[in-house]
Length: 193
Image 1: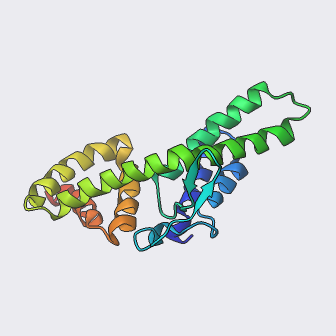
Image 2: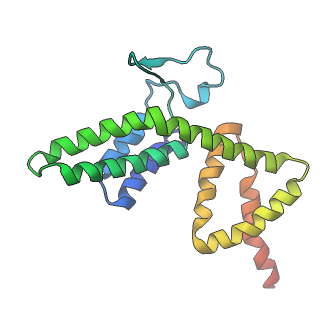
């Protein structure tokens, strides 16, 4: 799967893990990276960003290629919306009403609220990490990261570094995070010799 389709995999895996309809997660992910939208990579160089004009509000038509947090937030919104509609919809019309209403609301919420919020938060996280990796005290940042990473592995929370790494690649075109992760994993082996 190309990295620009990362939101599709994220929304699918959230719906799978939460026990809701997986195909809805895939469709939601595809809407986040639709080719009709301005590619997330092209936003910085765009002179004009197209918008959906609803009269009372305008929403920028920006895709969320390689964006992790907007996809995570949209995936969880879909899960909760679908569970809500499953609970209140009669079984007779559930097969039609639940997927339609769930997707329409999830896409609307994803593009108006969760996507922009996730984009901003992801930008903050990547800016902080990037600054730590390239500052005058990068040795201190690397040391702290190395000490923190080992307990994260024990708890299983180390998978969040994949999201941070993906955000760094999307924001800055590369990352120095993986070499530190590799060294953090190799270092304990040196003491076993």
